[in-house]
Length: 185
Image (tube, rainbow, N blue to C red; front, side, top):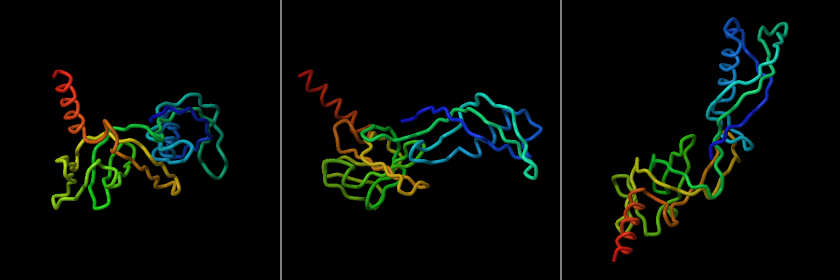
């Protein structure tokens, strides 16, 4: 889930930004410090969405930089267990599918791709005995089943598509058409 979070920090504005408008130089420094930052509490910082109050700055002798107490907003992505996400298949391997969900890639183990016997084709796609297939760039819907920040610089997100109304959007459309056909009969 994406969130907007309000933060307060004592931000260092390096000498190269001094001389610009204070708000612009603080925003540049915030972007350098926070974009791509990952923590278990915040999640993955996507961007700085705005700068609020900037209090009077202090220059520390010998450093040359200015320091400002600042309020600002961050856009963060923090995956939640059981959350359903829309994304694209970016890679298919012998052990599973890598799935881009915007801020990060998640992984779907091959056993979690579909309710079927699955095999990896030489063309780099997954095929099930039922005729379902999955290939790179397919748009899919998946559910978060595991989130790990054990290595904070490389969080892991485990996903599944083995539940109703999950999987390739093509599969979901086919299921809807079959259901509406049954209802008409």
